Image 1 (cartoon, helix red, strand yellow):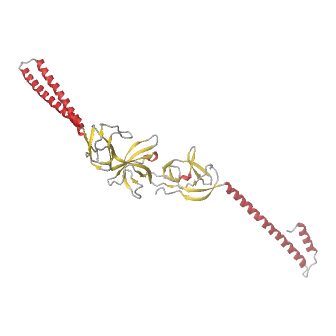
Image 2 (cartoon, one colour):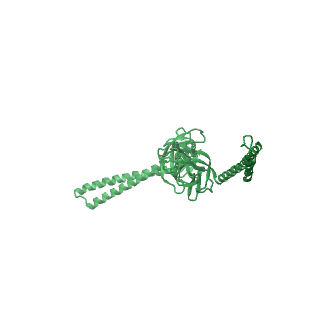
Length: 415
């Protein structure tokens, strides 16, 4: 680059140089020197620019890198509408529609049994016969007492009628007539007592035949010929002492399930439901919601629901494990988010949003339906919100972020 002293010397040389042929132009040597100085000055400027520009670019890149390192890299998801219909899967135990332990109502010896385990029986069908000779003798004695009471009543009744007829002609005293009438009433009461005793013993004798209370299958037989059985038993105990037979009704089966409190309001009679059993892969057993307890269990916070299954083909066995699939319909479905976007803070479930200025905004939310890997957010979101997926526990409001990936918030909840 030219300096002031150099320029002055150059001008002075030009002025002092002798004129050329035309009397005005400087000598060629002076012009060459002037041009050389201009070239050197330009070259110095270019070299200075070449060295300064990379330094400026490096400084700017370093500044950008530091700013990027200060911002938290995140991926975001967009909330999507939750499905209007969802499936609730609950475990259940298949139970018989009716289950009865059969006991003896009279004491005696078993003379014969007709059904063994696995036998299909009809209501009223004889399962076994008990021999009770003492009871038979008591019934015969009671019938004889009934006949005696009947005869005494008939005689007392005739006598009372005669005395009432004599009383009309004043042939007997009123007190004597009343005495005969009172005696007739006493004999009538004795006859009624004898008849009741006969009926009681006859009923006990009828229990010599042990019968099935309903259509079903015999699942247990605990007696054999010659076994001594006693009237009554102790139902409810684990060992079931005194139980002769056990009968279960299996044409229709019950399945009891416990519906979580959040879904209890959507389960009612008529809710679509079906069963799946491990023994029958891919097969769906049609069922129906029969009834519910209409009260939440304060211990488990669940609603007890009974599901009835038609089992006339006998495919399902009582006591087996089943999975109950309930189809729940929501009148006002909200938006859903993956569970990985949730933060569990002391003040409640929280979601981190990436604001328009790429800074974190924390929002407390209320969870609706649970779809497993996705949950329904009851309110407070729109489909344009950018929800941070997998936020760290240390994330705070106002923290700068950089968006690295954007994914859809809708999952497989509707499938």
